[in-house]
Image (cartoon, rainbow, N blue to C red; front, side):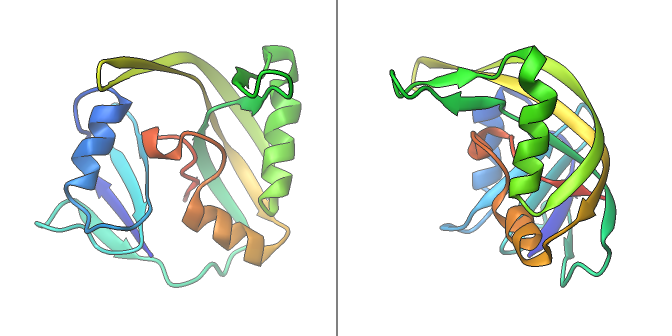
Length: 166
């Protein structure tokens, strides 16, 4: 497992995804989180062509970590089977439930970023976005490790779900 820090890639979430996929051998799961000044990537293998600054992650020895994560707060409507955004009044509870499901609890703050739009094959993709940061406490190390490796929530290929720990 590798954590790579690199310069941001310009474009919408789908263009960033395409740029990252060019730098990693397929097939493998690649998670990313981009801010204005950096791009953080979690992957099974090192990137190719000297991209970024990869660091191997061997184990998780601590039980508390500072963290950040961008989530797509949504659920599948049972009647329509479509994804629906979580209302702002239910957001804190939804985030806490997601974290508990993934082996940790957290003291956190969040910022609703609004809608993120990407274009894929001339089709507009719109996703709700919330950026969460705080201090987490690991309650189940096995589940937590899998969550770190696989990401959390929906739209992981578009920059959501990477649990960035410090």
